[in-house]
Image (cartoon, rainbow, N blue to C red):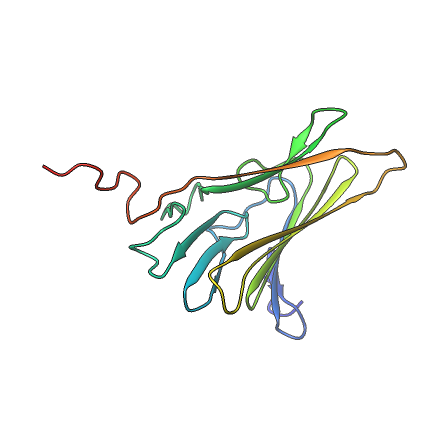
Length: 172
């Protein structure tokens, strides 16, 4: 890596910024990637915390935005569950980091999160379509063990659908 700082650095070609997060390690503040087209955008941090908007980042939030650099909360989460054991984990360190490390690669128009836990390797790619208001989550899971596995993937999105969560539901 070039311009490495002990937590991350750029790839030699400068196309990606890689953040390496061993267990218990965090960046001093969220290190984010803004991914957007003319109509839809998302801000994704190295922990996988994200918020998404349509048209206007302040007025038309689809999921909540927080300016809290300490907790870096997210309104968008994903979990992978092993059906035989019931154990679950996230392919990103938000909302709950695991005992194994994570890697985040922020690139132009995408962010990739890599994680291995309990013999399952996950690679989550987040990006926005070039010409349509669509956000994608592409998740690849690889079984690194010799035993057959059955897994489920769960995602949850906390919808805001406006500028404030409390909104203007009632006017006096």
